[in-house]
Length: 380
Length: 181
Image 1 (cartoon, one colour):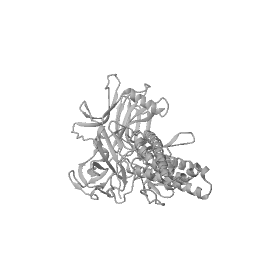
Image 2 (cartoon, rainbow over the protein chains, first blue to last red; image 1 turned 90 degrees about the horizontal axis):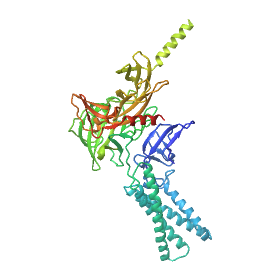
Image 3 (cartoon, rainbow over the protein chains, first blue to last red; image 1 turned 180 degrees about the horizontal axis):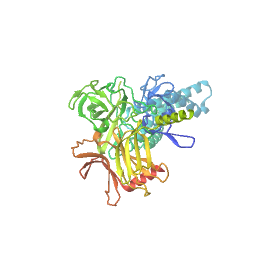
């Protein structure tokens, strides 16, 4: 269970968090507790500690391989379906198999006469549970839509496999021939697909609505509480860029370890940070993250007259990559830059007195309807 | 002698622990003066009467105050003020609403607006100013409303699409009421 609000002894709300399905912070206020998404501890590195391994909510991936090497990719969180599934310790499929085994032996208790029957029904249940979870997660990871449609497809595919394996396996265990078992499997698979699809679709749709997203396809329409022109976080992935500073460290403050992170709010406000702040000292090197063309120098009074905008094509889409607060830029509009090129030096234009020196980097593209769509910059 | 040392120590202690205010901009509204500037690690704002009666002082926000104007919202004897401050790629517009009891003003952030300088394609000429907000009676009800993100040239106002929007006087009052609940 993810922590959404924390209150003090008087009932006053000290901390709020609203999450995207994979755990990235959508909006939030306060910084009282590190125990947040899925009730897990948010480490100072920005990763959640799940016991067996660390999880990065922004990249939606585990940082290390599944110790049990389950699933179509051992790095995918909850088999790519975090709306319908939970992973309390990083070992999701084992639990699906255990639950399947227990459930099937309970449901067929009247047919169990000896240890062989018990083990057989347990094996069928484990295969049905694990197989359903495996296929459901593989489908969920392969589709690009969510909401009711995504939940339905995921639930139906997992339900069919689970139902088919369970139905045919249990029928064969009861002594039926191959054809009878197969027919029973198809029938149970159909029922499993329908019930799993409807149930999973409805849950995913309701969850999408709760996240201010479209019920049917889970598309997020998030403004960040703005007025006039609006910003929203795009569910788009961009490739890793070059490290923008020598250290690549994200800015923190004594009061706020999430100060420079993408998607977090500051100072108890409701507005999320639409970029990432990489910390350093005045005149530290700032490197271009992605190949592109410099389109503008000077991005208003907050970013300062030396701030740089580079237009880059990433995964086939045009993005603006803004480097704010520079003390000096060494590129000019029209210059072609390569990932890793030195483009300027860190400065303090527009940075409040008490805030750390940093370069603010945002990756965005204009969208219809006056929206600015943002994605998280990252480097490897 | 011991008393003198205590007094000196006390005075030194007070002078070192006090907030260091530095005001860089002064707005005058009749008898009232609003000063904005910096203080320690934050930005400061102070409201006083010309006779030097201090009504409100705050040193808690980050950013840079960009503008102040006045608007009577609750009809007590003190004027209310609309403020804005810039922070990275956006500005916050809010209200300093007067109160009958100390500290006499309460700060209420209303809305945040994207910077058209960063996300828009505007090029200001020398006689143009970008205003994060202006007060103007847009619906002819004899009450000033807020228009956000406009270019001011002389007395003319030019909205910047899609960065401009409006907040009517009554919307402002309702937002303040709801936020103070």
